Figure 1 (cartoon, rainbow, N blue to C red):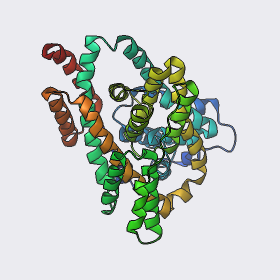
Figure 2 (figure 1 turned 180 degrees about the vertical axis):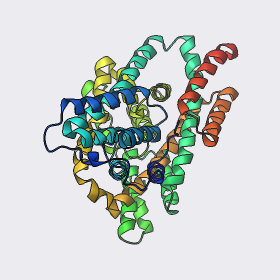
Figure 3 (figure 1 turned 90 degrees about the vertical axis):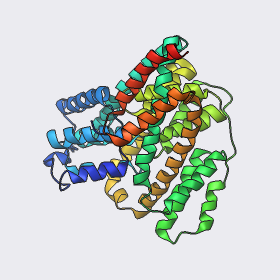
Length: 407
């Protein structure tokens, strides 16, 4: 199956498949001026619901599956329209694969198609994450559960390290972004909030597209924000936290981990580091967007209602953004400044990922066996095109087999 890849890799791969204008007839203009038919809406709902239950392998895999089905097989939109929307979705916060489901739904069936495409793609992952959270809370203390997570955690760590390596090859196309990322890493280790780091790097990079870079501009990265803690865990505070994440999160879904670690573990202390890593592991096992980890965490924080508000909160901004995006995509795509801003944000996002990976390694790598699993998982991903889900399953199986013997 197709491996995950950064946005640029996805676009290049798709462009290589054709001249960018085939793969769809008049269906690219399928946003009808009138009301979409019930059959059209059923097509959108049925396809994305099925994809939500079967999509493993990360954002690049999901995007490739969407292109094959909606462009090549069904002709819902042209390949050029698909590429334009993919590029634009990477200029706004949120999970790009989920936003592509929304955008394709809009192309096929207008506003209702946008809503159905997003909901049907997210719902399976949210339901599976909810079920996993219930089982985790009920059975998490059993030896079998500990053994499973003992094997899964280092494999997940290896997946993150491989993602860093792969995404870095796309993110650092301009050499000066490397020192910018290193400054972002330093700022993160000095406890500057991830949101400030992302915005500062984006602004510095955007300024470079307008006028020559000035070293003084990099001082933005060491501007620390005043920490603020929520008084207690409640439905409203959980909802607002995840709305904020959905509204500001650029880059790979793995950047979500940096925000969750900085706020939920270090600032608010709503979760332990172990609980966060367990949530990440569940997000790797279930199909669909990694952002469905919010469902799992919401359940840990506030039970069933917490799972619901966390899920709604983290995906709600994407529905709003894509609703505007589909109307202005051509102008966004042509903006030099918007593209430069995204370059800076992506460089900072990788720095955040590197920082949180270091912290997570301390809880995942507890002995020689777990170190070996992490190294082996990263090496396999770097050398092959294996679906990461199979590595997670393999780590779980080894954990169940070995943990009891070693302990």
